Amino acid sequence: MPRVSLTSKEAAAFLPEVNRRIDHGRAIAARAVRPGLREVMWDHPRLSLASAFTAILLIIGLTLSQMQMWGLSGTTGRNGVEILSVDVEEDASVMVFQAPGTSIKVIWVFEDTST
Image 1 (cartoon, rainbow, N blue to C red):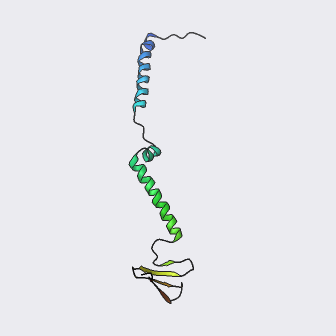
Image 2 (image 1 turned 90 degrees about the vertical axis):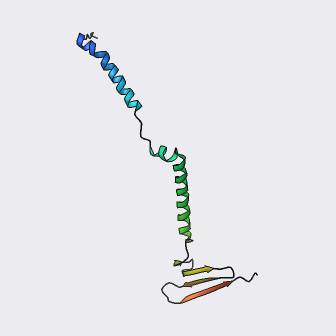
């Protein structure tokens, strides 16, 4: 391999250029890195707790909506009747329902006979 020689001007600029590149690399390494989604959501206790709680509520809500257990007013029961209202009292409970497409309403009164 042929030898390379530097001029005095190039030799004088060589070491400062090496130092500049080293300092530039340190500046990049020292710069704050933006956290990723995992670090934001799971490395902070409040956010991870809120995320877990939200996920649990979502699962419960989806499960109950599939089981049709949110508010019985205006829902269709398992046998196809439309439940209009349910009133639960200490002495008796009342449920009003009708078959879809009809105007006939059926009222059931459930009386507590155990007392």
